[in-house]
Image (tube, helix red, strand yellow):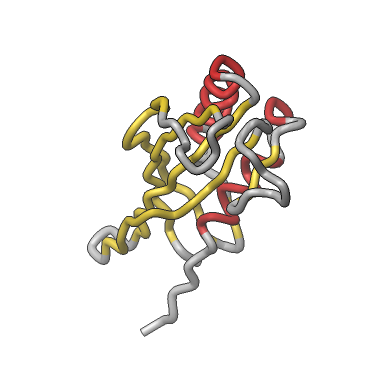
Length: 133
């Protein structure tokens, strides 16, 4: 039996979005930067679930994108931009693993951030299908 090499899905998504010219000037990471108060343009990436599907030989992670901006309109625009950029990740190869499909599980929705009262946040969830190396 061969050993599966699962990629770091959060890093895969972060790296994919960071390299997109339409997100230039937007912080993209899996944790907020120092001093983050929710008013900066940012996309925070978190794996929130998903599972290995043995019959298909695929990892099917669920990934949340928390998108912030200085106002609701800007946050929404960044959310739509990140959404389109991530849906374009099919075919991406990362550390030998291949993204075979990207499907939206829940599109961008307004979700106030009660820990950051000045924040403007949209949340969306995507499911990736990844064939490990």
